[in-house]
Image (cartoon, rainbow, N blue to C red; front, side, top):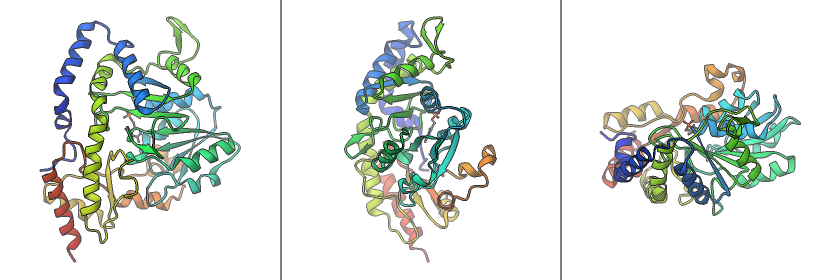
Length: 365
Ligand SMILES: *Cc1c(COP(=O)(O)O)cnc(C)c1O
Protein backbone atom coordinates (compact mmCIF):
# COMPACT_ATOMS: atom_id res chain seq x y z
CA UNK A 1 0.00 0.00 0.00
CA UNK A 2 1.25 3.48 -0.84
CA UNK A 3 -0.17 5.80 1.82
CA UNK A 4 -1.06 9.36 0.87
CA UNK A 5 1.13 10.58 3.71
CA UNK A 6 2.92 8.89 6.60
CA UNK A 7 4.02 11.46 9.17
CA UNK A 8 6.27 9.05 11.04
CA UNK A 9 8.12 8.35 7.80
CA UNK A 10 8.28 12.05 6.96
CA UNK A 11 9.86 12.92 10.32
CA UNK A 12 12.21 9.91 10.40
CA UNK A 13 15.12 11.78 8.74
CA UNK A 14 14.93 14.37 11.54
CA UNK A 15 14.55 11.93 14.43
CA UNK A 16 17.89 12.72 16.07
CA UNK A 17 17.64 16.49 15.61
CA UNK A 18 14.09 16.46 16.99
CA UNK A 19 15.07 14.37 20.02
CA UNK A 20 17.97 16.68 20.74
CA UNK A 21 15.80 19.79 20.42
CA UNK A 22 13.07 18.34 22.63
CA UNK A 23 15.52 17.37 25.34
CA UNK A 24 17.09 20.83 25.22
CA UNK A 25 13.67 22.40 25.88
CA UNK A 26 12.84 19.96 28.67
CA UNK A 27 16.11 20.66 30.42
CA UNK A 28 15.89 24.43 29.94
CA UNK A 29 12.90 24.70 32.29
CA UNK A 30 11.44 27.46 30.03
CA UNK A 31 8.47 26.36 27.93
CA UNK A 32 6.60 29.38 26.57
CA UNK A 33 7.88 32.61 24.91
CA UNK A 34 11.61 32.00 25.22
CA UNK A 35 14.83 31.69 23.26
CA UNK A 36 13.67 28.89 20.97
CA UNK A 37 10.76 30.95 19.69
CA UNK A 38 12.94 34.04 19.31
CA UNK A 39 15.49 32.05 17.32
CA UNK A 40 12.77 30.56 15.10
CA UNK A 41 11.15 33.95 14.48
CA UNK A 42 14.49 35.38 13.34
CA UNK A 43 15.34 32.38 11.18
CA UNK A 44 11.92 32.17 9.54
CA UNK A 45 11.77 35.93 8.83
CA UNK A 46 15.16 35.63 7.13
CA UNK A 47 14.02 32.54 5.23
CA UNK A 48 10.92 34.40 3.98
CA UNK A 49 12.85 37.56 3.09
CA UNK A 50 10.59 39.50 5.47
CA UNK A 51 11.62 41.89 8.25
CA UNK A 52 9.53 40.26 10.99
CA UNK A 53 8.05 36.93 12.01
CA UNK A 54 5.72 36.46 14.97
CA UNK A 55 5.12 32.89 16.12
CA UNK A 56 1.55 32.00 17.06
CA UNK A 57 -0.41 28.90 18.02
CA UNK A 58 -1.65 27.80 14.58
CA UNK A 59 -2.40 28.93 11.04
CA UNK A 60 -5.98 29.93 11.67
CA UNK A 61 -4.88 32.21 14.50
CA UNK A 62 -2.20 33.72 12.26
CA UNK A 63 -4.91 34.85 9.81
CA UNK A 64 -7.19 36.00 12.62
CA UNK A 65 -4.45 38.01 14.35
CA UNK A 66 -3.53 39.78 11.10
CA UNK A 67 -7.16 40.81 10.55
CA UNK A 68 -7.55 41.79 14.21
CA UNK A 69 -4.32 43.82 14.19
CA UNK A 70 -5.46 45.81 11.17
CA UNK A 71 -8.58 46.70 13.15
CA UNK A 72 -11.00 46.74 10.23
CA UNK A 73 -14.42 48.03 11.33
CA UNK A 74 -17.30 45.53 11.69
CA UNK A 75 -18.93 44.77 8.37
CA UNK A 76 -15.81 45.49 6.33
CA UNK A 77 -15.59 43.28 3.26
CA UNK A 78 -12.62 41.01 2.79
CA UNK A 79 -12.17 39.37 -0.62
CA UNK A 80 -11.29 35.71 -0.26
CA UNK A 81 -10.85 32.86 -2.76
CA UNK A 82 -13.95 30.71 -3.23
CA UNK A 83 -11.61 27.74 -3.71
CA UNK A 84 -9.65 27.47 -0.48
CA UNK A 85 -9.58 25.59 2.80
CA UNK A 86 -12.29 26.80 5.18
CA UNK A 87 -9.65 28.05 7.68
CA UNK A 88 -8.96 30.99 5.35
CA UNK A 89 -12.51 32.23 5.74
CA UNK A 90 -13.43 31.32 9.33
CA UNK A 91 -11.39 34.15 10.93
CA UNK A 92 -13.06 36.68 8.62
CA UNK A 93 -16.58 35.85 9.69
CA UNK A 94 -15.50 35.23 13.30
CA UNK A 95 -14.35 38.86 13.51
CA UNK A 96 -17.69 40.17 12.15
CA UNK A 97 -16.11 40.94 8.80
CA UNK A 98 -17.80 39.91 5.55
CA UNK A 99 -16.10 37.32 3.33
CA UNK A 100 -16.65 38.02 -0.38
CA UNK A 101 -15.92 34.88 -2.38
CA UNK A 102 -14.04 35.27 -5.66
CA UNK A 103 -13.91 32.55 -8.32
CA UNK A 104 -10.56 31.02 -9.28
CA UNK A 105 -8.70 30.97 -12.55
CA UNK A 106 -9.67 27.49 -13.82
CA UNK A 107 -6.06 26.68 -14.80
CA UNK A 108 -4.33 27.44 -11.49
CA UNK A 109 -7.44 27.06 -9.29
CA UNK A 110 -6.16 30.14 -7.38
CA UNK A 111 -8.04 33.43 -6.98
CA UNK A 112 -8.52 35.00 -10.43
CA UNK A 113 -7.10 38.56 -10.39
CA UNK A 114 -9.31 39.46 -13.37
CA UNK A 115 -12.43 38.84 -11.25
CA UNK A 116 -11.40 40.91 -8.25
CA UNK A 117 -12.31 44.43 -9.33
CA UNK A 118 -15.98 43.57 -9.93
CA UNK A 119 -16.30 42.65 -6.24
CA UNK A 120 -14.83 45.85 -4.80
CA UNK A 121 -17.13 48.21 -2.89
CA UNK A 122 -16.62 51.17 -0.57
CA UNK A 123 -16.53 48.65 2.31
CA UNK A 124 -13.72 46.49 0.88
CA UNK A 125 -10.63 46.62 3.11
CA UNK A 126 -8.40 43.75 2.07
CA UNK A 127 -7.72 41.01 -0.45
CA UNK A 128 -6.94 37.77 1.38
CA UNK A 129 -5.39 35.30 -1.05
CA UNK A 130 -4.46 31.64 -0.55
CA UNK A 131 -1.36 30.09 -2.10
CA UNK A 132 -3.27 26.84 -2.41
CA UNK A 133 -1.46 23.55 -3.11
CA UNK A 134 1.91 25.35 -2.75
CA UNK A 135 1.72 27.85 -5.61
CA UNK A 136 1.87 31.60 -5.14
CA UNK A 137 -1.09 33.59 -6.40
CA UNK A 138 -0.50 35.99 -9.26
CA UNK A 139 0.29 38.88 -6.94
CA UNK A 140 1.37 41.57 -9.39
CA UNK A 141 -2.13 42.46 -10.65
CA UNK A 142 -3.52 41.93 -7.14
CA UNK A 143 -0.99 44.38 -5.68
CA UNK A 144 -1.83 46.91 -8.41
CA UNK A 145 -5.55 46.71 -7.60
CA UNK A 146 -4.88 46.93 -3.87
CA UNK A 147 -2.72 50.02 -4.29
CA UNK A 148 -5.26 51.64 -6.58
CA UNK A 149 -8.06 51.12 -4.03
CA UNK A 150 -6.09 51.45 -0.79
CA UNK A 151 -6.50 47.81 0.29
CA UNK A 152 -4.28 45.48 2.28
CA UNK A 153 -2.98 42.30 0.66
CA UNK A 154 -2.92 39.36 3.06
CA UNK A 155 -1.76 35.89 2.05
CA UNK A 156 -2.69 32.55 3.57
CA UNK A 157 0.54 30.66 2.84
CA UNK A 158 -0.24 27.65 5.03
CA UNK A 159 0.55 25.42 2.04
CA UNK A 160 3.39 27.41 0.47
CA UNK A 161 6.49 27.52 2.70
CA UNK A 162 9.43 28.16 0.41
CA UNK A 163 7.43 28.98 -2.73
CA UNK A 164 8.53 31.91 -4.87
CA UNK A 165 6.83 34.47 -7.10
CA UNK A 166 8.88 36.45 -9.63
CA UNK A 167 11.99 35.32 -7.79
CA UNK A 168 10.82 36.50 -4.38
CA UNK A 169 9.82 34.32 -1.45
CA UNK A 170 6.25 33.89 -0.32
CA UNK A 171 6.10 35.46 3.12
CA UNK A 172 7.92 38.60 1.99
CA UNK A 173 5.45 39.65 -0.72
CA UNK A 174 2.10 40.53 0.83
CA UNK A 175 1.49 43.16 3.53
CA UNK A 176 1.16 40.23 5.92
CA UNK A 177 1.42 36.48 5.40
CA UNK A 178 0.01 33.69 7.56
CA UNK A 179 1.74 30.32 7.89
CA UNK A 180 0.70 27.07 9.54
CA UNK A 181 3.14 24.45 10.80
CA UNK A 182 0.50 21.77 11.25
CA UNK A 183 2.30 18.39 10.99
CA UNK A 184 1.29 17.73 7.36
CA UNK A 185 2.55 21.07 5.99
CA UNK A 186 5.83 21.44 4.06
CA UNK A 187 7.37 22.64 7.32
CA UNK A 188 5.55 20.71 10.04
CA UNK A 189 5.76 20.74 13.82
CA UNK A 190 4.81 17.83 16.10
CA UNK A 191 1.58 19.54 16.98
CA UNK A 192 0.04 22.91 16.24
CA UNK A 193 2.02 26.03 15.42
CA UNK A 194 1.74 29.04 13.11
CA UNK A 195 3.36 32.36 12.27
CA UNK A 196 2.82 35.75 10.70
CA UNK A 197 5.51 37.32 8.53
CA UNK A 198 5.47 41.00 7.57
CA UNK A 199 7.80 43.90 6.93
CA UNK A 200 5.45 46.34 8.69
CA UNK A 201 6.98 47.01 12.14
CA UNK A 202 3.75 48.39 13.64
CA UNK A 203 1.77 45.32 12.54
CA UNK A 204 4.42 42.92 13.84
CA UNK A 205 4.49 44.70 17.20
CA UNK A 206 0.71 44.69 17.53
CA UNK A 207 0.47 40.97 16.76
CA UNK A 208 3.22 40.30 19.31
CA UNK A 209 1.00 41.87 21.96
CA UNK A 210 -2.27 40.44 20.69
CA UNK A 211 -1.00 36.84 20.81
CA UNK A 212 -0.20 37.27 24.51
CA UNK A 213 -3.44 38.73 25.97
CA UNK A 214 -2.71 42.13 24.38
CA UNK A 215 0.01 42.62 26.96
CA UNK A 216 2.91 44.95 26.22
CA UNK A 217 4.32 44.57 29.67
CA UNK A 218 3.43 41.83 32.14
CA UNK A 219 -0.03 42.46 33.68
CA UNK A 220 -0.49 45.65 31.63
CA UNK A 221 -2.85 45.15 28.74
CA UNK A 222 -3.17 47.67 25.92
CA UNK A 223 -5.40 45.51 23.73
CA UNK A 224 -8.04 42.83 24.26
CA UNK A 225 -5.78 40.07 23.04
CA UNK A 226 -5.87 36.30 22.97
CA UNK A 227 -3.64 33.43 24.04
CA UNK A 228 -2.05 32.25 20.80
CA UNK A 229 1.59 31.51 21.52
CA UNK A 230 3.88 29.05 19.77
CA UNK A 231 5.39 26.97 22.56
CA UNK A 232 9.14 26.41 22.96
CA UNK A 233 8.93 22.71 22.13
CA UNK A 234 7.33 23.34 18.73
CA UNK A 235 9.72 26.25 18.07
CA UNK A 236 12.74 24.04 18.87
CA UNK A 237 11.47 21.30 16.54
CA UNK A 238 10.89 23.85 13.78
CA UNK A 239 14.40 25.24 14.36
CA UNK A 240 15.72 21.73 13.82
CA UNK A 241 13.71 21.19 10.60
CA UNK A 242 13.87 24.62 8.91
CA UNK A 243 17.43 24.16 7.53
CA UNK A 244 16.12 21.19 5.52
CA UNK A 245 12.96 22.78 4.12
CA UNK A 246 14.60 23.67 0.80
CA UNK A 247 15.97 20.15 0.43
CA UNK A 248 12.49 18.71 1.09
CA UNK A 249 10.91 21.16 -1.35
CA UNK A 250 13.49 20.25 -4.01
CA UNK A 251 12.50 16.62 -3.63
CA UNK A 252 8.83 17.60 -3.99
CA UNK A 253 9.70 19.52 -7.18
CA UNK A 254 11.57 16.57 -8.66
CA UNK A 255 8.60 14.29 -8.01
CA UNK A 256 6.12 16.84 -9.38
CA UNK A 257 8.22 17.22 -12.50
CA UNK A 258 8.11 13.47 -13.11
CA UNK A 259 4.33 13.44 -12.66
CA UNK A 260 4.02 16.32 -15.13
CA UNK A 261 6.32 14.70 -17.70
CA UNK A 262 5.22 11.09 -17.44
CA UNK A 263 1.49 11.10 -16.73
CA UNK A 264 -0.39 10.42 -19.96
CA UNK A 265 -3.47 12.55 -20.20
CA UNK A 266 -6.66 12.09 -22.09
CA UNK A 267 -9.33 13.05 -19.60
CA UNK A 268 -6.87 13.75 -16.80
CA UNK A 269 -6.07 17.44 -16.23
CA UNK A 270 -2.67 18.19 -14.69
CA UNK A 271 -1.67 21.25 -12.66
CA UNK A 272 0.09 23.98 -14.66
CA UNK A 273 3.76 23.21 -15.31
CA UNK A 274 4.97 26.76 -15.87
CA UNK A 275 6.24 27.32 -12.32
CA UNK A 276 7.65 23.91 -11.38
CA UNK A 277 10.71 25.45 -9.74
CA UNK A 278 8.80 28.21 -7.93
CA UNK A 279 5.99 26.11 -6.47
CA UNK A 280 6.36 24.44 -3.09
CA UNK A 281 4.22 21.48 -4.30
CA UNK A 282 2.42 20.96 -1.02
CA UNK A 283 -0.11 18.91 -2.96
CA UNK A 284 -0.21 17.48 -6.46
CA UNK A 285 -3.80 18.08 -7.47
CA UNK A 286 -5.17 16.67 -10.71
CA UNK A 287 -8.70 16.79 -12.07
CA UNK A 288 -10.73 14.05 -13.66
CA UNK A 289 -14.34 14.07 -14.88
CA UNK A 290 -14.72 10.51 -13.52
CA UNK A 291 -13.05 11.18 -10.20
CA UNK A 292 -14.92 8.58 -8.17
CA UNK A 293 -13.93 5.86 -10.65
CA UNK A 294 -10.28 6.96 -10.64
CA UNK A 295 -10.13 7.07 -6.83
CA UNK A 296 -11.67 3.61 -6.56
CA UNK A 297 -9.36 2.18 -9.23
CA UNK A 298 -6.26 3.60 -7.52
CA UNK A 299 -7.32 2.27 -4.14
CA UNK A 300 -7.79 -1.19 -5.69
CA UNK A 301 -4.14 -0.94 -6.74
CA UNK A 302 -3.11 0.11 -3.23
CA UNK A 303 -2.66 3.82 -3.95
CA UNK A 304 -4.19 6.15 -1.41
CA UNK A 305 -5.45 9.54 -2.59
CA UNK A 306 -7.17 12.46 -0.87
CA UNK A 307 -9.56 15.18 -1.99
CA UNK A 308 -8.68 18.81 -1.28
CA UNK A 309 -11.48 19.66 -0.89
CA UNK A 310 -14.76 17.79 -1.35
CA UNK A 311 -17.20 20.55 -0.28
CA UNK A 312 -16.78 24.24 -1.20
CA UNK A 313 -17.22 26.84 1.54
CA UNK A 314 -20.51 28.17 0.17
CA UNK A 315 -21.92 24.62 0.27
CA UNK A 316 -20.89 23.98 3.90
CA UNK A 317 -23.58 23.75 6.58
CA UNK A 318 -21.54 26.29 8.58
CA UNK A 319 -21.99 28.82 5.77
CA UNK A 320 -25.65 28.63 4.81
CA UNK A 321 -25.39 32.44 4.70
CA UNK A 322 -23.41 31.97 1.48
CA UNK A 323 -25.53 29.16 0.02
CA UNK A 324 -27.24 31.50 -2.47
CA UNK A 325 -23.94 32.00 -4.32
CA UNK A 326 -23.44 30.45 -7.75
CA UNK A 327 -19.77 29.69 -8.22
CA UNK A 328 -19.62 27.22 -11.14
CA UNK A 329 -15.82 27.13 -11.49
CA UNK A 330 -15.33 26.44 -7.79
CA UNK A 331 -18.12 23.86 -7.80
CA UNK A 332 -16.64 21.98 -10.76
CA UNK A 333 -13.19 22.00 -9.14
CA UNK A 334 -14.61 20.44 -5.99
CA UNK A 335 -16.27 17.72 -8.07
CA UNK A 336 -13.15 16.84 -10.05
CA UNK A 337 -10.02 17.33 -7.94
CA UNK A 338 -8.00 14.50 -6.47
CA UNK A 339 -4.60 14.77 -4.79
CA UNK A 340 -1.96 12.17 -5.66
CA UNK A 341 0.73 11.10 -3.17
CA UNK A 342 3.62 13.60 -3.13
CA UNK A 343 5.94 14.09 -0.17
CA UNK A 344 9.71 14.27 0.37
CA UNK A 345 10.15 10.61 1.28
CA UNK A 346 8.10 9.14 -1.57
CA UNK A 347 10.47 6.81 -3.45
CA UNK A 348 11.14 6.87 -7.18
CA UNK A 349 9.90 3.28 -7.40
CA UNK A 350 6.59 4.17 -5.72
CA UNK A 351 6.19 7.16 -8.01
CA UNK A 352 6.82 4.99 -11.08
CA UNK A 353 4.17 2.56 -9.87
CA UNK A 354 1.63 5.35 -9.32
CA UNK A 355 2.33 6.86 -12.75
CA UNK A 356 2.10 3.48 -14.54
CA UNK A 357 -1.12 2.64 -12.74
CA UNK A 358 -2.76 5.95 -13.66
CA UNK A 359 -1.56 5.70 -17.26
CA UNK A 360 -3.26 2.30 -17.54
CA UNK A 361 -6.51 3.85 -16.29
CA UNK A 362 -6.25 6.61 -18.86
CA UNK A 363 -5.55 4.08 -21.62
CA UNK A 364 -8.75 2.14 -20.83
CA UNK A 365 -11.57 2.74 -23.31
C1 LIG B 1 -3.67 24.11 7.17
C2 LIG B 1 -4.30 25.32 6.60
C3 LIG B 1 -4.79 26.35 7.41
C4 LIG B 1 -4.94 26.24 8.89
O1 LIG B 1 -3.80 25.98 9.59
P1 LIG B 1 -3.94 25.40 11.09
O2 LIG B 1 -2.56 25.50 11.62
O3 LIG B 1 -4.43 24.00 10.97
O4 LIG B 1 -4.88 26.28 11.83
C5 LIG B 1 -5.26 27.49 6.82
N1 LIG B 1 -5.29 27.62 5.48
C6 LIG B 1 -4.85 26.65 4.66
C7 LIG B 1 -4.88 26.88 3.19
C8 LIG B 1 -4.35 25.46 5.19
O5 LIG B 1 -3.94 24.51 4.36
